[in-house]
Length: 579
Image (cartoon, rainbow, N blue to C red; front, side, top):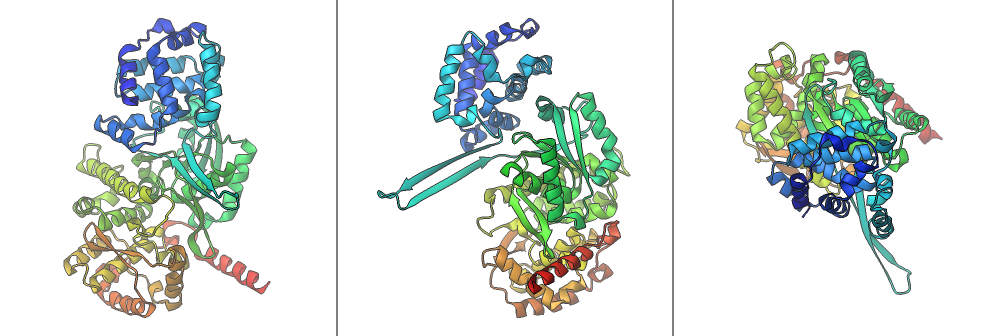
């Protein structure tokens, strides 16, 4: 039904430049057109999260319209400028000329009283005011999200039953939210409208920025928003692994409070995994849920942590112990930022791509084998090559396949209600030993991923040939197969226990049973783990560098050693026990 109305509106609604005079006649041009009225009512009354609707748009290669369809659920509450902008994106796959005119209309009324007024206010001043007054009364009862939303990015519903004496009440609650994931080039180019379209109607952008990004791209960020006459409120934070703690989350929340961030105003986070994780966590607890857009500038954030629905910070010497489930409303993965990264950061980020390749996507694995070190040497085709080189197209495909695999794996279990999570490959024991060893995240998970692959081989699930294909891939990309932290029995046993705590009493260790296929180990014992580690050491010692990675430590990559924070956390815990 919605799709048909969009098509009819696109076919029959005509706009010309003479309609763009900003006065009462402009809104009359719309309210007196039945196609517009029918579409508006349908947009505000449908369930835009319906899988059937998504599949219909997908069949027509029009999925770019879906996020705008979901925002238009709250059409009446949008500013008039924002409404026409979202409508222009909605109809783009069906009528480019109408889309262009609607976009022009949105720009024409920008920064005017008419454009900044909510759509419902302008409709109430039209000749159809009686109709829209009645609509308000109806929607207050049956469709409040369309009228008074706290967020244009979420919807919820529930059901309550009670006993006859009202002494027992049972309730179910459901939340619908959405995320758009875009692989984009040159987001900060003033001719790229993506950020402009998301912030123009708010008049400003509250931007949380990684200090490294500020140093390299701060001026470009300012130029972009100045060019589009959008006020930029910068919040610059250092974002090393040692900075990923609750105190910084609290500081960020206080910055949001001082700036008076609106509950429907998406914060822009620009940077890598650390600033993304703590920024998202801060957004999730501010107003109990504030939307954010993630501009992912590192390899890890671009293909893994950026679109992740899990926000977090470290605590008690354990990775990501505190956190919430809060996905971005838009994740932008922009390869162009990779050119300014240290090669050591690129290398450790590639480990997250290896994760999806080994456990889920054989096509991606083969592509990584074929591409080899060129991926790292060229920073995904952004340095040491021309734009015509094959490495550029391969890099784009690797990013796209990685994102597809990650999102498919992650979003079907948004709140981790079960532990059958193949993307947790390498993220069990490593969560306990990463900080203690001072390892970069990519090297820490590489150690566990290769160890887990060996566990699968020992059980007869993974062939010897595939085991060594996996070990060879990690080794050729100079990632760690081994670190002596594995010989710390107490550390391994503590990590074992923490997995059980985090996964509801189960180990559920994902391991490959073939390239791109996964199974779970749930009956591993601590003595068996110790024995496997000893044997694993002998196997990987035959690989280059005896299985050691290149620049595996945070200190090797110019980052502060997280061991210092781990020791500080240990002292805090000891003091707490004494008191």
